[in-house]
Length: 323
Ligand SMILES: Cc1cc2nc3c(=O)[nH]c(=O)nc-3n(C[C@H](O)[C@H](O)[C@H](O)COP(=O)(O)OP(=O)(O)OC[C@H]3O[C@@H](n4cnc5c(N)ncnc54)[C@H](O)[C@@H]3O)c2cc1C
Image 1 (cartoon, rainbow, N blue to C red):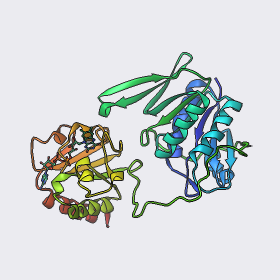
Image 2: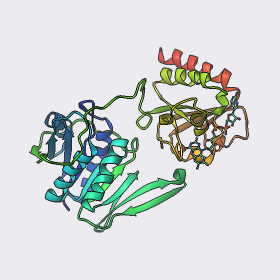
Image 3: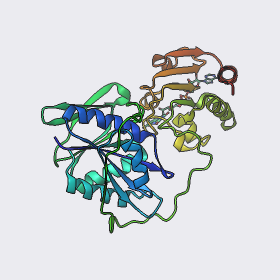
């Protein structure tokens, strides 16, 4: 079998940590197929960023040096598509983040290669690469294989594979042709104001729901999240009510998260919320209704008034963590 590629996600001039999770998945697949493990980095300063993959044991890193510091899915997908057509890797793996979803969907459309999105396991069955992807909140596991093209594209769900540690020795760098790729140009990127921990990548998520009663009370959720170093999540009810922005919404029409620890505070546990968070490692639910459906998926259920429990959790975690 041919090469297995991992695609680095460049953010703020660095490789996003999730790139090293994708590296672990790619390494695992390379071991199963007997193929060699290579990486691809497209962006401003790509050659320097390639070091991160070389230090983890990539035998080759393809670099596409572009002048602009901004991620441009149109341009990057054109570069990746051309690289796939020229080098014909067996598989290309990236992370199922906003970046990876935009890049891989475009590349699949441009290249005609099959895309297995948001997967949590990858196997080799005979000639085929077969992946699994949880659906309906983890109640159903879909088994996916690609048709069409020599190369299979995959995006992995963040927080499933551990990030690869350094420990390899340097391989070679191969420069890609980037001139004339894509038609769009990004002239400016504006970071979201007040952005704290990224919800998709967070190890801890503290989410609040309609039990908070009003927008101002969301500060209880932010205080606990800041204390434990977590990201803030929300149910759709509070997003629809305008208490918090949509980017915080977890669930069917929001984000799917997979943290080690998820706090659901004043959230009833409607199925549309559960599908976005029930694969979390440990779920702590606070709800005054002992029959709330959230308790069916929670590891620890606290039947109590959130206005007493949330500040107490913040205080105790603050003391234990020295914050
Ligand atoms: C097509 C579709 C898509 C949807 N997508 C999503 C989605 O992506 N994400 C999502 O979250 N929802 C989604 N929903 C909405 C979903 O069905 C629920 O309406 C929503 O999740 C309810 O939000 P909630 O739990 O905050 O509110 P509620 O259901 O009103 O629950 C509030 C909870 O707070 C508890 N509570 C009240 N006061 C206190 C207190 N003082 N202390 C402790 N507990 C208290 C109550 O017992 C209750 O359980 C979708 C719905 C549809 C139809």
